[in-house]
Length: 294
Image (cartoon, rainbow, N blue to C red; front, top):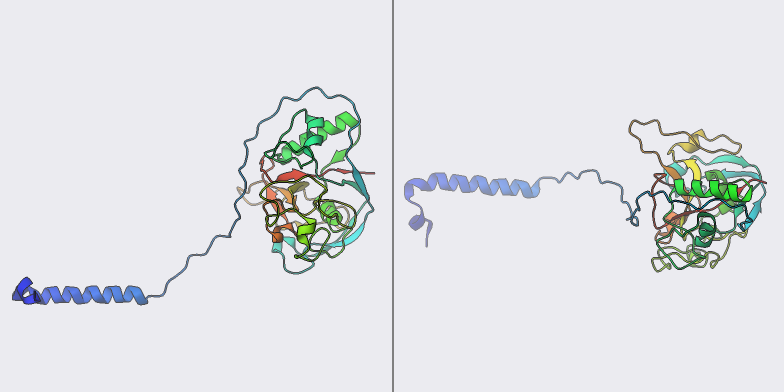
């Protein structure tokens, strides 16, 4: 059937003009440059966050609690992204000097948590020697307060500087705790490539030069500091710790966590990598390690 049969002669002019404009419109759409919107940073999916619930704890009883601490002699080191391939929040590289301290040979385990708190808190249950997780920064502080009452000693969370100094075996230039080789990393850490999506008992992988285990991988470890992107620009030289809150309006208060976890890629296990979460947040890959002063 021809156009003459479908459209009367007197209507053909307007119709053809309309069709011509339509063709030109679609042609312009095909050839117009595409303007891309700025892309949001890619974020890896986090395990499920658990609501904050305060536990009713049994009375404190004075007792000896085995915490297995390792002495770390103080000294000075270059803190931050010494390899030059990290994030800007790991810079500038700056000299930090630390006093002597003791740090946990292992991450706090479910068994130790149960001794102090009376019951186990963790998503991965049935593994007393696995690191405790699903504990917030606030939970860790309550645990430490109770542990100090029980033992008469003074435990605390490590500062961010102490954690990095210990993870790097007193500040040696090392990308992961115990190794510089990504090929050797499976021998030193539990992470997304070998964890089978769960935590594992502490102390099964190779330690770093100080004999500390799981400083990279297994669970992220809370430290004392408040997370501030520009913290390294404000660090003092001697025993720095950032307790300054962000100045930006409506900024969310975060605390620093270090070391990467069982579901983290190798890049997040780097000993200079800095993370942060709300102090009340509970995740299936967040735990902590103890520090005690001499």
